[in-house]
Amino acid sequence: VLRCLGIPTRVITNFNSAHDKNLNLSIDKYIDMSGNNLHLSEDSVWNFHVWNESWFIRRDLGSFYDGWQVLDATPQEKSKGIYQCGPASTRAIKEGDVNLDYDSPFVFAAVNADCVTWIRYSKKRKERVYSDTRKIGKFISTKAVGTNSRVDVTDNYKYPEVKEFSFKISYTQYKNSLMDDRKILVTAV
Image (cartoon, rainbow, N blue to C red; front, top):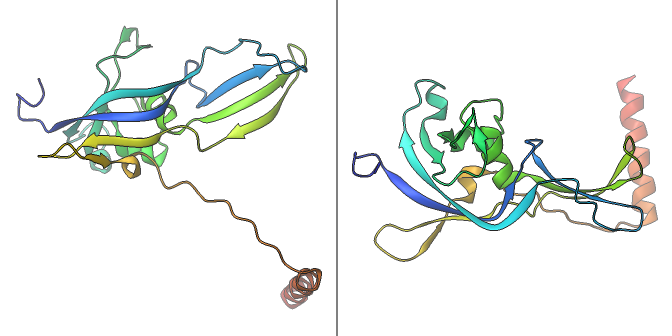
């Protein structure tokens, strides 16, 4: 319909899409001390989810948020009392501006939530035992114009994940680095 009105619109697919039911920006799993799932959270991770993006000028939010806006024609949750989602600015999603209207926190979580596992010892005591910050929001894609090729638009929704790396240094190198730190402290005093 939006294309018929002359509004640029495209379909977006998000793989490993989070469904953050309680809007805490994480997908929580609770286990007991034996590792059994406690089914205390309604959060879930879907293989994929599809929504639309349309190009809007956002006078209500300011020109910083102009551009592609998320519109979900198949929302699973109510927003302001009715089943709707969007228009949420992809710029707001990328920048983590989850305090904006139009379901920005929900869309942010769909592409960038952390998957957290908690051990629940009692109703008042729990401990986070695992957190995966990379699982959600993979290969966010649209179809290329004029071909059947996939265009990766993940960078429109989130910054690149920081790659972890490890390295080894000798004890002598470590000891020398401590000496260098001491020299800096002495110089600063």
